[in-house]
Length: 610
Image (cartoon, rainbow, N blue to C red; front, side, top):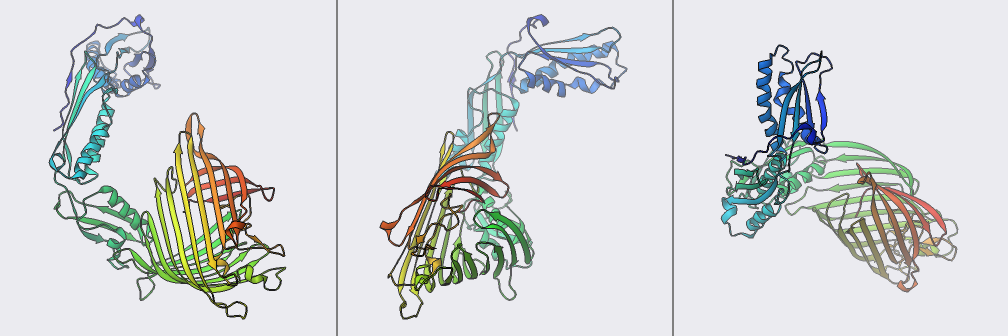
């Protein structure tokens, strides 16, 4: 049982009304049906105390009683002093000077005037957080760490002002920190606030009983009808025997909800169950087997676009999901279908993909086809992909002469690839700090069989990095990317494996894929080496001294493409812009100046992608 002890050791005589300046509010009734009015007066700066007394004083209940006589009203005034003293104590004023009197004006209702001189606020003195149960005696490092986290995270430390709300909040947070990990059956067994009104010091003590440590047991699923029941534990990724952690349950719940198979998911355990192997209860509501999504959008790179996407969560006769998408836009319309299997126990899926795309680079038109088959694994931080891929690119355009098409990426190839991406940001999609790393490694053979372009081996690698660093005024975002293709000079590597850059998410100040190799006829083609770098300073836009959902930015982007590393001549873009934390992700609006082309370009995009 919680215990609250308040000791009153000093009472000062009431001050005369003229000794202090006051704030006065009369709680009158516009309907003129009250038996009396209430006027609460406090010194300037104590608005919270005045409003608290006005709202919660017991006298308010009797204002509607119109037949009160003078004796009853006098009795209520006597009782009101104790009521006001208790209310003031909830805000940390345990030695208030209170004077309550009845004031009557001619031909008007009586006014109960409540004059309060709060005195100095009570401060927190010593704080004791005691533990019982497993957390008090366990030799495990996790238990010791959790105990230290609760002590260090105590929200009402020595020297702070004591109020009832802060006291209640601190106790609640300590209990939450206890039951969040290892001890879901934990409870608060004792709480004591010992207030010395004379010295205005409050000594605090709480006792937490952790109970036993809990380990996860079997996963019990309800709500499954259309899908294989093994899907839920595989998507949730909760290991049987693992120590209970509410954060892990929440993350598992989010994985289920974002998988596309379920409209909702709820994961919990019953603290009354066996702590050695507590069953994990999962309640889901399945999504429809099929859905169609119509999308519209726009970007400065590709202009307006419209898309149609069909998803079948369980293709008849299989447990595979099929997502087919048609996107129409000016620069890069495409049609694609991707089939993925149900994840196995290690969260690996089989993936099959077919894509047909048309890329318009103004002077060049590239029609490419892609077939891919492999495996993929996704987790909260790391994605892995292993696949075999066939690429075919056919390039056409005004001014292509002789064998120039080979330099534009006209060709086909088959390759094996491994892609790894790690995201170590503090939060998504609005990271404030952290970093991301990614790389691609692949190799294969070109498939061209013409006399001048025999089958040739090639290898390809790409590395990218994004780092975000917090500052006192905003943050710095830096990114870098580099890619290389090694092959014989005569190898006809398809353009999908080569590099071009420029645009909203690479080098601003230049058009989409405008940075590449300048061919003899003036056409821009892809190259075998690519580098991109950027530095951006992001600062919050403030209103009335507080940060808003908007940010301002200044940035410098550089990037270059060449067929030999020593030939790279980076193009530079500089500019500024704004960011908005929109409901669908970060909205970027940037105005950049391309130093090489000597022109300004507006860039817009939505979302955080790494």
